[in-house]
Every structure is written in structure tokens, then in C-alpha cells.
Length: 50
Ligand SMILES: [Ca+2]
Image (cartoon, rainbow, N blue to C red; front, side, top):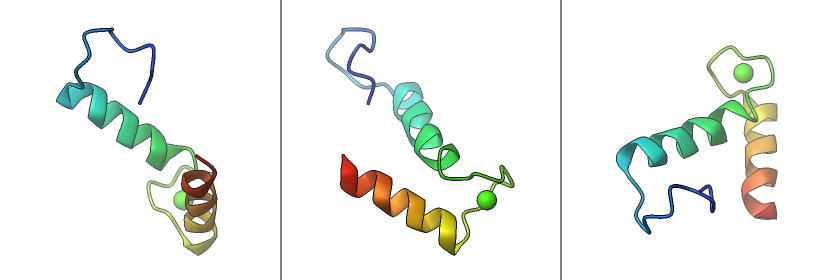
């Protein structure tokens, strides 16, 4: 999540949805709204790097 956030020490559904959508959009390199095997590989690498 964005550590800067709104500094209220909570995560709203909207903040969570934004985070999840960003995590989906980053590896969706062709922006077709789906993650193919290669894009899933990028997602896995991103998640393992954190
Ligand atoms: Ca895609």
C-alpha cells in the first residue's frame, strides 16, 4: 500500500482497490485487461521482489 496514504492508520476499501488495481495493471503490459503466462511471470517477479 502507499505508505504515504492519508495518514489515518487505516486502509479504506477504496485505497485497497486502488492498490490491487495497480498491482494488476503494472504487469498487464499490453493493456488488454488480462494477464497471460508471460505477464503472470512479471507479476510473480514483482510480488517476490517486495
Ligand atoms: Ca495482458
